[in-house]
Image (cartoon, rainbow, N blue to C red; front, side, top):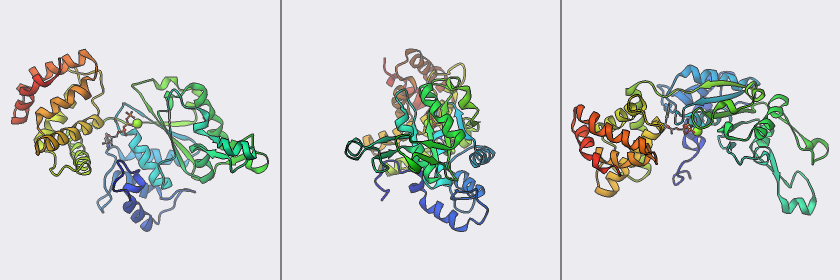
Length: 353
Ligand SMILES: Nc1ncnc2c1ncn2[C@@H]1O[C@H](COP(=O)(O)OP(=O)(O)OP(=O)(O)O)[C@@H](O)[C@H]1O
Ligand SMILES: [Mg+2]
């Protein structure tokens, strides 16, 4: 069923692993949780008994995140773009609640309706406000069903919309004043909590109200420190995406080495670009390189394809970044050894402008 989906949610993609973990999980679980903390951690960081490693990072961060979610405070994941905050929140929700799709996408136009509930207007006109004409949004469902709710990019919401989360998080009850009797109060079931993510780059976490901050425990997700770990992740993820895109050859190790090294160089002074050269971007460039190689020429993709892809991902529409990128290809690339570094240098004229 999930075969043709572009990106199935974690609970579908890893349904077998989740079922196996659930079957052998005998440890105590917090009320309302589908897995114990130990099993949820294994699902996320992997183990040596067949559970794949999905989030690459500090296992103690995962432990702290899970413990927070078992308390009555929300979990706030902050960090640079592309450090897998969204991925981690999806994996945690899939492990803890068996469902990661109760998600609110924060933005300038997010309204309370998209957080709490709205109405089916045809039914509302026909029979007035009734439970049948109520259209639950993720917070209402999460509270009623005792599940984790994900709130992506919460700091991009207007402050007054962020504030509507305050009473939900502290009182753990959602009032629906239009409904009378017991239907007018939805009390949160065990298992409900909120995982929010916020980007430290686009618009500051500072814009979150102090009252809301107090209701969350913050965890910072850091970029991957080690070159080998990052290379391994990019290789594994690119191979998976390419296979899904119908590409019959695996990405070349030497090309990925050049790609990951260049990304790491472009993250630091003096070549630092204003665009974030995150691991997530590296994965997407590796995917595009493989697609170009295979669908344009029937091979795995080379360093020249990296240059073609970088213009659009790294430099975007920033002329300074383009100049910095050009300088990197002209001056840094030829100093490195290896056929693909020479190819990268030779392809510098493919940059636009
Ligand atoms: N530590 C990591 N572990 C696993 N995958 C990672 C890691 N860092 C980056 N990735 C890659 O990046 C992708 C995750 O990006 P994701 O969208 O979750 O980042 P984000 O921090 O939410 O970014 P943004 O701030 O732009 O929303 C993953 O699908 C994976 O390919
Ligand atoms: Mg995200």
